[in-house]
Length: 247
Image (cartoon, rainbow, N blue to C red; front, side):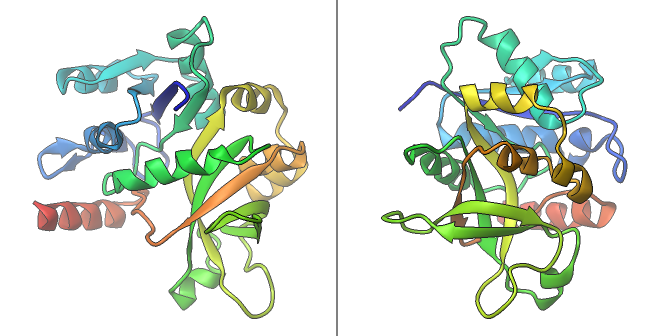
């Protein structure tokens, strides 16, 4: 397996839920739940990248590793790249996993599945999606849809053609909810962050479109669950209920 580094970007300035990395869930800060899920995946070194010393101290107190990054990054991917550059200046890491810090109920197997989807020849980036089951999610703009085509010879993997907040594609058949976990070949991450924001990225407010517009290949593993992303107080309460029920 190539040398892999998992980076969890975390900042305090979330608009809808300020301070959410440190939000208490069953007596433990949310960022620690996410760090533990990444460690359970067993894919090597896991580091939290943050611009806030308070988050770094919480991670270190729990036995984790944290690195301080600049405050002004326009995206999580830029924060991840700075962290990788600081942690591995010699370039030994070949694959970087970008794991969001607001997925406290994430099943570790999904991280493994995402990494496995990077194995295709010519694949620059891998990510995940799951079939939409709720009718309301088919039209909801906050549910990002994947438009993809099957990869020949690969089970449950689609090559991404587009990502959109609209209802797409048209016609009979499943729609897929994109899950924001990424595995990058390091050279692909370097290329991605060197690019300016693209036309469709700015229009849809989806940074992965920057990669597609530049001709990069994104393969998407289809999985059977959608992890809960915590963006609002209601999401936080749901995460507390789910994790309380699991203990």
